[in-house]
Image 1 (cartoon, rainbow, N blue to C red):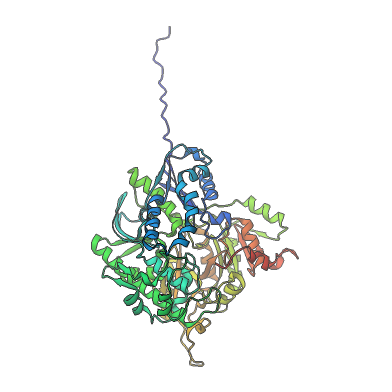
Image 2: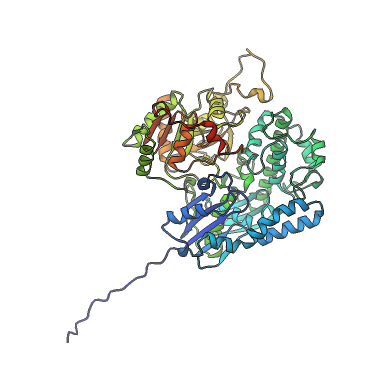
Length: 628
């Protein structure tokens, strides 16, 4: 018998990754986000797949994408978390309608079918959405906990004050708190019906824009007016305290009981009924927009100062729909006591899916958090990417004429030359953005120096209101040459507005009387007129090689050719259409509109070279989408 000792083979089990799926749905902008061992693997809004703007339904396609990105199925998930507590929200709706009964019966009757058949059956709805393959229980975080988690946990800060500002979650409409390490604590809140988000949406509605999607139009309209009604708003509509909290006089509003945002008393205060959607804009709407924007900024600054006083932090994190108000964000950055701020790129309800997943990982499971620089959001490029073969197959099926580049250098040099020649470029690269902003991977690009570019892109490509400004992309290291930013200061997610530097601004030669109101749309304002708003401001996106190397390479090529490190960046879609996701959607948008050039990965197409008859009917293409 062989008694010699034999080597012992030790089998070490590889720990199974812990996967958490976050969901938001059934209000607007439903989304899914997947966090694996604390890392954000994928996140996307359902609208990008369903092609239904602001799709509120269960995010089945977004879930499938997120799981596919990680090579997982529903059975591999450890936790599934929903971004709010539906029963607590239902309690608020019932109590509100009981308080105003019988006035709110019609809106109550309209809301109940969705609640009875979907929202109160949420566990069953999620189970069906996951093909009944997820074996675990569901977690429900509070709405503003999800917002706060989305703001703090991906941020680069070890500790920070947190502000969440939106319309309404369950009961809370704004929350203040503090984050440290792997925990957040919300200590103060405002509750429904007193809401900064709903106040802003009331003016959005009154000015003829759609609630929950037209607020950014109101912000863009504001510089064309004067805030002549700001004092009236603060004296008649609200009772504001020094800490920024307030109570609204609900006799001016109708959103508790009715199907409109404002009441007849509101109409009388501001000179007549609401503007009809799509009717001509008047100076009244411009002045109202300027007024509510001024009030919103005042509230944000007071709340920020109060948050600083309570927490003593140098850092501030923001989320919630109001945190997409980049004009207000810019003032908080410049005028509040905070030294640094970080804003969740998907600040609205979509970002709640991400926040809910991170809340479970850090707060409920107690896992360590190590802040990352510049942040843990990966440039918010968290959506799907498409391979070269998929693009080649698509182009072959369309008989498209294209040029393929072997490397990014040649592609960027050719594209920069075309933009400098005045061409408008549809630009699709890598992973799709998470959040409402196109950050350079699903973008339409143009020359910011071209004074005609704003009207051309608004009216012939985007098919949207002519007053709407375009945002600039600028190399981060050169941003302070063109904009009033401190050297090294950044705005990577297009969430900060700053002024164009005085030495880049145009001065009137006195040849014509100065314009007023909307007549100022075509006034020359700076050496980069296509991205300079009427008040001399710009919603800036700074670009660096760390977050987006291909876009940075393109800007460097353009700057080398023209001396200017600034270009226009707007989302790759037309009015009412969700931002394109796939190569096919990019190609069809390119062919239907007046976009001159399409770049997908390393493929470059010129409109003039495409086959005769390949261009679809513009009317048919636009007819697929509404007038959002």
